[in-house]
Image 1 (tube, rainbow, N blue to C red):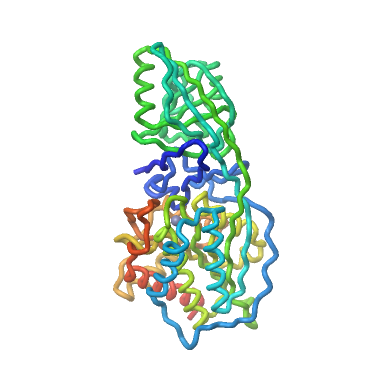
Image 2 (tube, rainbow, N blue to C red):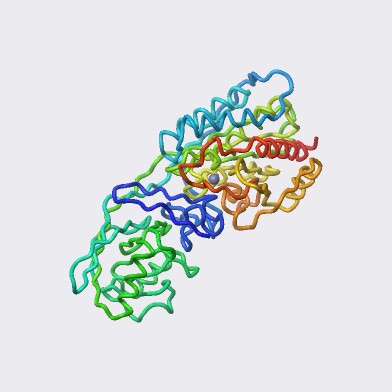
Amino acid sequence: MPRPVAPHRPGQALLPSLALCLLLAGGACGVPAGASAPPHQGAAPAATDATAAVVGAPAAAPAAPQAPVSDVAGEATFEAAAVLEHVRHLAGEIGPRAAGSEGSMTAATYIADQFARWGYAVERQGFSFPQFEDRLSALTVVAPAGEEPLEAGAMLHSASGTVAGPLAFAGFGRPEDMPGRLDGAVALMERGGQVPFRDKVAAAARAGAVGAIIYNSAPPEFSGSLQVPSEIPVLAISGAAGRELRQRLERGAPLQAHLAVDASVADRPAENVIATRPIAAGGAALPTIVLGAHLDSVPISPGANDNASGTALLLELARVLASQPPDANLIFIAFGAEELGLLGSAHYVATLPPPARAGLRAMLNFDMVGVGDELRVGGDDALMRLAEEVAGGRGLHLGRLPGDVTRSSDQASFIAAGILSLFFHVLDDPHYHTARDIPSNLSPERLQEIGEISEAVVRRLAGR
Ligand SMILES: [Zn+2]
């Protein structure tokens, strides 16, 4: 079931939630059906259909390795209590960690400090992303009886401008839905029909429309991304309002629409926190394994499960694996800006030199691993079988994730680059992307299971 993005008001920055987000149940994470698009401009990757995201600036020079100074005494074992402590800090004390926000930077510092404590060399890999801001958007419908202002918000990457024209219904925005030429008209279209927003708008503009209004397929308000800048102003309205307008048009009411969009795009900073274990002599011959989890949340949520759970589990794995290092080069990455379309992982993969990329044996990703009933894995078949075998040895059953969910978090950036990946995710979190995604929802038993399974998978991949 697609879930609409929370309504927004003019003047609010739009930071739609787009990653795990993107595809959970066809867009449950806030991506409207038919949208599935990260909100950045230019050659933006669409999270549903173009997972090989390539964004951002050139790679920063790696930080000089630090001498390992671990404060881990003896052999550590994975402890869910330690995971929960990190979760309480990230989601409870720091709170929402939307990309570009102060919270995300504070979280990145916390994560970097933890890695450093356990002797890892830490690099903070910065990149930027374009943030769309809807400064003031408005819609007025003029009917014979008078003017009717309607609640509306700009679609991400809508052109700015003020336009007016007769309102014309254009279905889902498919070519066959266009009621002939729309010269000078404003196209009213319904979300969905397997047509991405940008294609609806492009079809309307080609037919001559001067503006477009997209209404939700369900009654509430929504927002979504056009992925690329549009030629004409585009507003999103609720399904209830849209259906009513459609019915009036079908009854022959002459309606005029006045659209005003005042929006801007500004670059905002984000970062990946990358920890590496200094390579021992002969280390170049060892397999390299990347373990990752995104550190950002959606703006309205403390993100305890999404994804302080994965970040905290990553930190605990880093502690345990520092204490008893496997025969592998380990790279731990807390990714930034996942919720905006897997931007951090895309940046990391895009800036990996080809030899380093070719040397990666596997990528393990953790996103939303603390709440829900069913632990599942997705990704490479052999890696899933290995995880199932490890879990089976502990009397646990692992389900498998559908492909679209597997394309909906940071592992997708690695899979798109041909890197074998394994995704750990628990279905289903009722507090997903809400203010109620808080630390007390998390299951220590679940975190313990996933921690032990993933640690064992890493050790098996390392050959011991
Ligand atoms: Zn997530």
